[in-house]
Image (cartoon, rainbow over all chains, first blue to last red; front, side, top):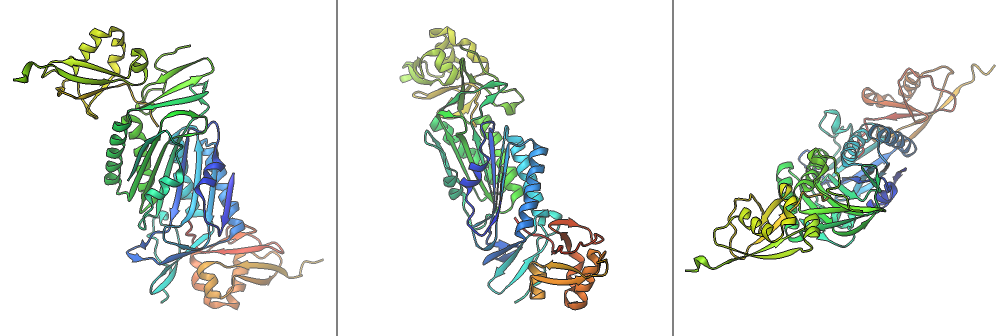
Length: 150
Length: 150
Length: 87
Length: 87
């Protein structure tokens, strides 16, 4: 099981290779990518910060739970930290499974759960300021800045 | 929009690059992979055959419909034909979207619809025989051989 | 004036039906105004062994799915499409 | 015998609260048997400006999420976890 928090660029080929299995008929890959806008604001770049050792531990626990719950063959979860430009990949998840339904279900659950539980934070940097984004948008909140600082 | 039926190896990096967009916050990638078993039989390898020109046309229509229905940024759909060994990728789909929910929904719809509509067929080859597999398993049938030939 | 001139149809076969026919491409001469079903019957007259494939076939005329009552234009390509299994 | 010897806790701060504190790691001396909430109050006594972050914090003791009534062992690492926003 490939689990990693790293400042290096995330490579899809590495995640795909890590979940390869002769019994897998489906691989689902999810990339969280830095978008040029959020809540109507233009984003310049993002800075991700993690509690790396705990983040890897929680990511591994979530991956094990996904494997057991969805009957997956293998999982890989990688999160990048540091400064990320528009278009760069912050989160990379790969899942292999016998059939595609569990690959899609497992992939979605994994991404949702990672965004709720893994100790990683992002700061948005705009032309005229920056803010830490606190709380996943999946918890029913808009993903709004915790505070503005010009 | 990258749409291709090819005998060449499918490269995930190519599909990801094809759907890159500054407005994309999520990329979902799906790989259909040759599995070593089906319905309890050990599979040696698969042979995929297509009606290539029509397959590309239908894939493009489905991709356009997915973009419109799910509000996607971009789609790529690639299908490989010829002899494929266990672990090789037969179908490669990439979707980019502002947010992950539509990326997952769109990806799943795209795979399901491609399996129902695109003129591509696969033959399973076992140690002791072979058979064309006819009909997608998504239509409520088990994906059983159309006829056995020893 | 050309009303009775024969219409040429290229029939494409794939997968199981192509293997059974030992051919992937068959030229058929039909009459103007004939439908997909008419052309299919001409093919079966020549190759009766293919009849068992008919119940599950779909049809494409010039790369568009059609029903078997569609009229086949001169020079058309008619594909006989077994249940697809790509992916 | 060592009952009254102070307990050392390493408090880790991240993201917004780390920036506000100007620190990512603070050593705190507490008493044996104290809970996460007790240690948090010791921190706020030293740095009252951090109080506004408390309502949304979660806590991890030695990399496990805990409630604020968990007892803090000697030498523990207590992480103050603002609402996460990875992905």
